[in-house]
Image (cartoon, rainbow, N blue to C red; front, top):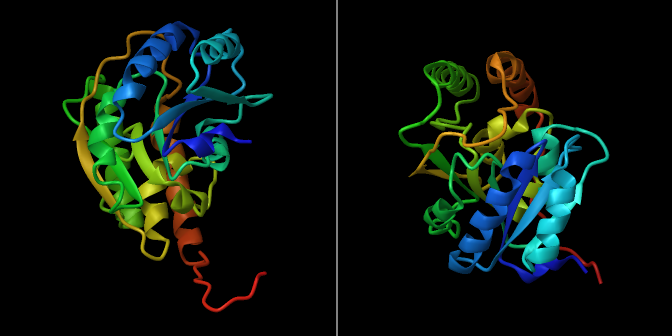
Length: 244
């Protein structure tokens, strides 16, 4: 049995070489889960880490009854880790947060307050603590993405999101899709999203996995892939049926 079915909310935490953050992740989630607005668990997705992250995940899960994990045999990237987490989770809602904890799980409660009314509730990083260069790159990428997709989202790079799991499973996943969650939700019949300001903090440990290439160059290319897919996306609603 998949234990995530016993929860209302599964928090997906992609992990790639985050050994320096693992002790803090365990402490923060152990403290937060009893205060979460929904009965929640944590699902670590090890993205083929080459340090000791997987061992630390295994030890953390052995100490905490509401912690679970899956692991890739090799590095497949953030979008693949998110897809694997969504495919694995059997709770009504799934959430996403980065392992660097530049956002806090405490703010999931702000998003969950609207989860009944929107298939996607996403954070907007208020008072970002990143460098000027990172903020400028994000601003350029967000402006270009909005022009190409028409999704109106303010900050798709914010790593704090809550999704209706059934909607999330219908998202057409591709490498880089994590940047397009609002636009991909809008492709679906009844798709909508809401943005909520959330807190943002400096990275305390470990190294960022993002560079100028994957903040600017890759998103520009992915925008064209999205536009191609948008006109070919399949929507359907089943009416009458006899399945038993």
